[in-house]
Amino acid sequence: MLGEYRITGRGASDIAASIESGVGSGALEPGELLPPMRELATRLGVNPNTVAAAYRTLRERGVIETAGRRGSRIRPRPASTSRGSLRVEVPPGVRDVSAGNPDAALLPSLGDAFAAAARHHQREPGLYGQAPVDAEFARLARASLDVDGVPAGPIAVTSGSLDSIERILAAHLRPGDAVAVEDPGWGGLLDLVPALGLTPVPVALDDDGPLVAEVERALDLGARALIVTDRAQNPTGAAISALRARELRAVLARFPRTLLIEDDHGHAIVDQPLHYLAGVTRHWAFVRSAAKAYGPDLRVAFFTGDTLTVDRVAGRQQLGPGWVSRLLQRAVVQLWASGAVDPLAVADSYGRRRAALIRALAGHGVDAFGRSGMNVWVPVPDETRAVTQLLRSGWAVAPGARFRLSAPPGVRVTVSGLSMEDVAQIADALAAAIGPAPARSYG
Image (tube, rainbow, N blue to C red):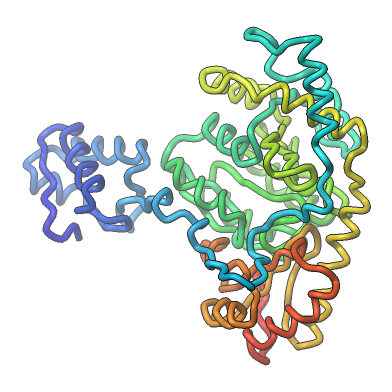
């Protein structure tokens, strides 16, 4: 506990500053256990309430985390250990199916859309003081939600799904609050939650989405928010079924103070119907992004939700970037209005590759998962061995550690990088790397 580092101070702010200084210098490492409050108070000759106030300040700043009787620890620093760094360096000649990018051949040309946006700008220049959300963007976004029955609510625009989620969490939660997240889950989100000073609570899932008992357990433990992916879950390809949605809504109805955030990034690339959870809890948000269907570099997403949540996010956004470029919004409007993407054709293309790989792996006795989207998740007994052997075979896949909190090891394959001719080759390579024993389920 603390090693040679000596905490000093007589007041709460001095004690907090001493601990924070130790963290900044590296003398106190992530995960290191702090002394119990009474013990430190005795050592420093101060009232235990003074130490409690110091720990509370550090918790609110995201420097430490407290786990009840297990005590307080220095919080891990995800900014220096980003899951994005948990990747394989791809040497020349190796096929990279790890990045999670959409198939560029299925993305629309952007030239006409930006030309139309520029012409609109000539007629109506974007200036300070105008509405942050383009009126036609809001109309088409709301219409797409209405088709799927998503509850009514105002529209806000952000710079991608993760930007939406970060702003929504910050609008309601404080450092130290617990957030239920899917496990395995999106690596960016698993980094974001602790970076905000929040505590991630893992929720296991299967092909039909988060397991009901797991969600109930997380909320019973005090999780103040739940983040779920409706379709094309990254990395497993899970999609919430109609039955699972009813069961999860029933659980959420018993925890109406839960902040519910739904990510539907797969809305234009999957053929699975949407079964949303929104509207059961007091505060909720439903997020959609243009990244997967129209191009990652557009950096445009939108969300709807209860009025308070949307107003808080929009108000805070005004104090920072102000708004997402209305030129970008108009370009996306043109892409939507012109039918630049055929969702059925895109979903069919990804679906055929995904299903073919899963069938080929099954032929080798290897379990693999992916009910929707562009990813296949393969649980493995030895992740390092699997990734290394696949690299030697000419394939770079994503190591499962990037997507896990506590689930069994695995690897993610992005099928958007595969042709139908590639499927048999990588299935053979995966089977050889994993071994003859069937893999375990991730749920």
